[in-house]
Every structure is written in structure tokens, then in C-alpha cells.
Image (cartoon, rainbow, N blue to C red; front, top):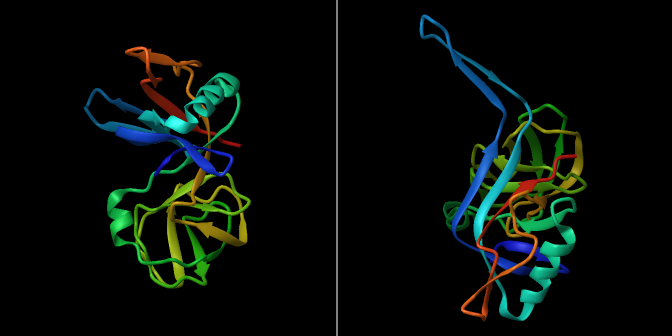
Length: 197
């Protein structure tokens, strides 16, 4: 169950439709000769747009989160893994990573099994979320997107349903609640953006 995470559990579950988007600032223009010129930034953040289902016993927790966190305080999101990733992965390991800032890969030790491409990962003591661009079986090089933002030194690699992203509610999210039929509490579709530090 993926969703908004607080005090050790999910307080609002993600529901379909769900979009996980990579936002990379890019400038595209066509010249008079119709040649395309593209300029791409190295900045990147993940954005999630989804319907949300407040859990019945925790609906009040979600309402309090919306109101108190608003658009300026961090919320934790249990990052949704692609269904293909969930079906293919065989690694239950707790791997360790070593890598240098600016690199598109890290060296992985203590892994047994497959961590498929498309898996979202997070390194211990690192706030950024990365995605594998190639399968990793056992130990070796883990290729990631975007490039590593800072060095990692034998950091734990979170790669299953333990990947937590620091995020903000986007500015168009209602900081309150909408009621349907007087009983069902729903904020409708919400958008969260990765907190970049």
C-alpha cells in the first residue's frame, strides 16, 4: 500500500489514476531551417499526481496533515513502485552503496537477487530519490537516474516498499477536506512534488 506516510504507517492510500512524473527543466526551439535545439538542465524532481483514499480509521490524520503541513512543510510519501518492478524483483537484501557525486552509477555490495530497472531507490542519509536504468543482479554497478547528487559511502540502499520521499503538497492542493454525500471525505486528486535540498 503506497501513500502518505506518517508515524510509521500510511495515513492516506494512493488510488488510480496515479502519475509519477520526472520533471527536468528543458528548453526546446526550432530554427528557421527547422533544426531542433534542445537545452536540458541537470536539475530533476519527482512529482506524483494521484487520487487519495483516506483510511477510515486514519481519515482525521490525513485532514490534520493537509491543514498543518499546507504547502510549506514536508510530508513523507511511500514511493509507489511500478507493478512490473514488484513482479520481477527477487532481492530481499539490504545492499550497501558507494559512489561519487555526479556519477550515473554506484557500486553495490551485499545484494543477492534481482533489483529490476525502473525501481525507485533511496540511499541512507540522502534525501534524493533515484531510479534504476538497468537491471542489477547480485553485486556490481547500479545505474541510476538522475546522476548522484552527493557522495555515498557504504550507505544502505532502500529499494522495496521502504522508499520514503520527502515532498510538499503542491500549491493547488486543498488544505482542507471535501465531503461527498455528507459522509465520504475526499480531497479529490492531489499533487506532491519532491523536496529538493
